[in-house]
Image (cartoon, rainbow, N blue to C red):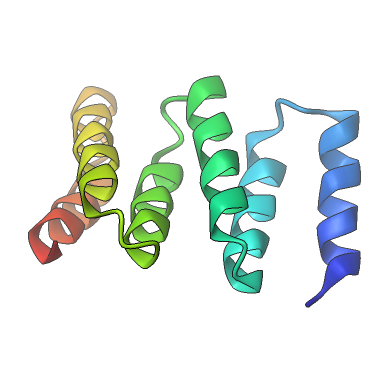
Amino acid sequence: MDSSRLEKLKAFLEANPDDCFVRYGLAQEYVKQGALEEAIAEFQRILETNPDYQAAYYHAGKTFQKLGRTEQAREVYQKGVETSLRTGDLHARSELEAALGDL
């Protein structure tokens, strides 16, 4: 477990709590370390702050799947597809639709 990386990311967030890029890095670090509930909480904070942050939908869905929470994964993927349609992000849309199809 790389606690120094985790601590650095937390320190960056303390200085700027609305930095979605840093929060996304923290969520990914939690996933890497197996702290999946903590990762979900960070992905959700990202989407509350910036609902257009497409990568958070995909990775939140994957994390829900790892936890065996398929219905929550489906909901996140679907919301991500809706967002990608609104923002015109065709790449995100195709990834999210593929993830939905794999459920």
